Image 1: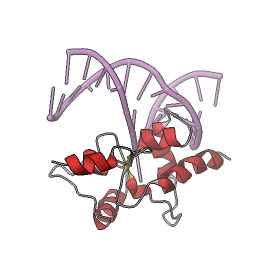
Image 2 (image 1 turned 90 degrees about the vertical axis):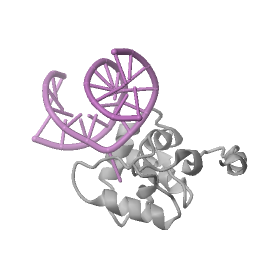
Image 3 (image 1 turned 60 degrees about the vertical axis):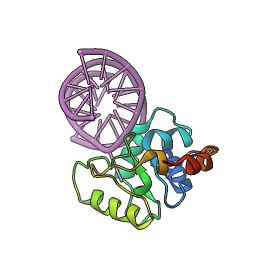
Image 4 (image 1 turned 180 degrees about the horizontal axis):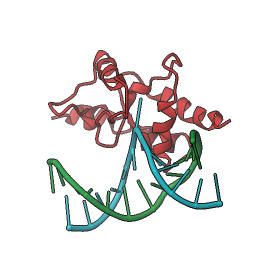
Length: 116
DNA sequence: GCAGTGACTAGTA
DNA sequence: ATACTAGCCACTG
């Protein structure tokens, strides 16, 4: 089944640390399917709620919670993220400069220091 | 196999 | 800054 393909995405999502977010493209790249950002979204869409995958840490490239075609999961997503300490601006976007997760996260600390 | 669809992105206007 | 466009590619009917 195609699930095995999505499993890679799920594993990648699981790597995102608490209190951080990653973009769909980032997840795809991390999973070894660079450029398949859309499929990440599709995979998460088909993801069972009880899978244990922190899907709520995945946002689009703008740091925004991508609009769903249906459902209220976007509200849940925001609640879960705020519960982890992720802040949203007035437009409902995450401050990527502070919360975007970098694989190398080499500049994380530097950013922390420079952080406005 | 073709056409429509989408929880995306990077470009362009 | 926002709005629209064209690539993108796997899934579905």
